Each structure stands twice: as C-alpha cells, then as structure tokens.
Length: 66
Image 1: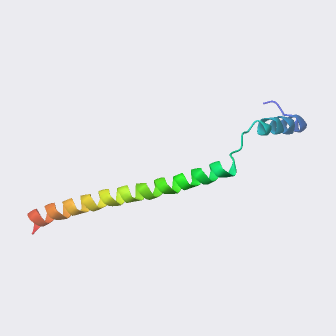
Image 2 (image 1 turned 180 degrees about the horizontal axis):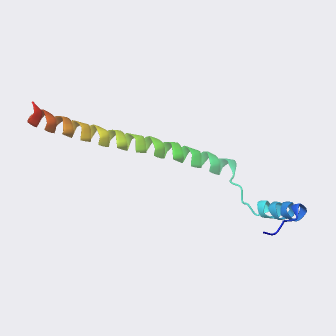
Image 3 (image 1 turned 45 degrees about the vertical axis):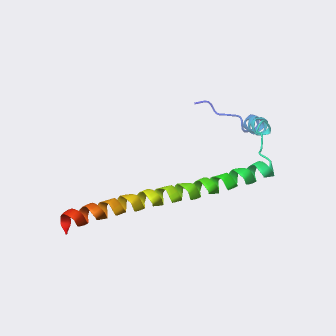
C-alpha cells in the first residue's frame, strides 16, 4: 500500500472538483418539484392498488367466510 502525499492529494481533489458542473438554481428547483410530483403520484398509485386489493380480499372473504 503506497502512502499518498497529502499536498498532491489535495491538489488532485481540487482539480477534480473544478471539473464538476454544478446545477443552476432553476435546475435544482425544477428537479425538486419533479421529485415531489413523482412522490405524490406514486403514493396515489399505491393507495389505489391497496384499496383495490383490500376491497377484493374483503369481498372474497365475506363471500366464502360469512
């Protein structure tokens, strides 16, 4: 295992960080809104699926179980 030179390491980190393309405020806002919209749509979908399964099972159990 080679021991890294701390100064060289920091220089390389700074070099790599300078290559990062940071998103604009508008891009961050739009992405955040899209995540919230998708979370709401997913919650609605799974709530509907849960309701349908629960209703179906309740119907089947009441038909056979009494």
